[in-house]
Amino acid sequence: MHRTVDVWTIRNLSEYLIRNIRRSGYSYDAAFRRYERSRGLNPLLRRTVYSAGRDLVSRYYTLTHAAKVIYGDADPRALADVWVHYFGRGFVEEEERKRFSKKIARDAPRGKLPEMEEIVEDLDEISKISIETSYPRWLVAELRSAMGSEVVEMLRALNEEHRWLRVNLTMTDVDSAVEALRAEGVHVRKHEKLEYMLRVLDYDGPLSKLKPVSAGYVTPQDLGSAMAAEEIDEDDGMLLDACSAPGGKAAVLLMRRNGAVVGCDLSAKRLREEEALMRRWRMPGHRYALAVCDSMRIHRRRFDQSLLDAPCTDSGDVGRNPAIKLMLENRRIVERFRTIQRALLDSVMESTRELVVYSTCSVLPEEGELAVKGIEQADSRIGLPSGYWGIGHRVYPHVHDSGGFFVSRIIPARSH
Image (cartoon, rainbow, N blue to C red; front, side, top):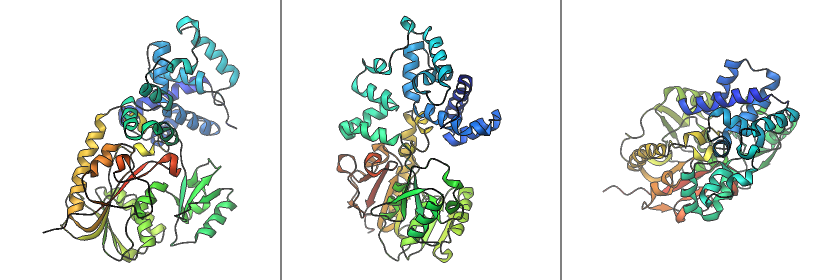
């Protein structure tokens, strides 16, 4: 059971998080850490305040619409007030919440606060889905066109955090890892195809604090990330991991392939972190090399296979980081990433002889299906369902109990 906090804490939290996320592009966790340091948060209240802030940020579009209906304005304090009334039960002491609701009702039309169903009842279908699931209208419109009515189920699942752990098979076996987690009070379920991937069940504490995680036996990794790496063929050839850091996909490749992996990334800092993780996971150092390099400029036909997990909006990672929703308020961010993705894909295809696996942690067609449309592609190696319009393949949140990913196995054009 959460400890409760007062309304003024929620107001202060809302103002700090929303303004800092929108201005600086922080992840939710980064923004919350800054809030915690600046406010000297009582450690006993941390879990409640953290969870309340996550919920408030995730409901940003719902709260914005409701605040405009009630107040005619949607500043962060108004969003906090609306959240306390509609969603604050269990976070704010109930008698205080009720008193506060009566107070803000006096400023509402007709002196009462409408039910949430009344707030959305006169909206068109796209706007109603947008407000009920809390996503920007443009995103809902695009996905409704691509998926039909299934978009509602998908967006609801995308709002949830799907927590998976990868067993580091270089250090332990799956059954031993499961037993070690059970000893910590954590129950997991093996994935039916990728047995080294474990779904965390009925545990909402920080995974980083678990002993098997600290020891390196298991590590948090999204299922979709592992599935993207699994689309690489099992052979002994030279493989490029074109945007390698932080190294989760490279670790999967090293666990199940015998060939060498070259990890490339623009960030020296992130590569140093990846190198530290590889050593911690006891990955075979003679089979991988990490290099600070630009994957837009790679030597022609140097690699047998390549994995390009391209930079993207991370719209498929909303459940883990709800701050992404605020970044998606600006539709133009998609085109900025598309320019980078096009350049990377062209370069990696030129540098690869046999197979390129292109992936993005995105639910948007511009970063997936439309990026590879017209390019020769192969069937999914692990049986992933088709993407929108039958192009490529997807990891769907409501189907796979994971974040959202696009994955395509591309056959590079042969050199002349």
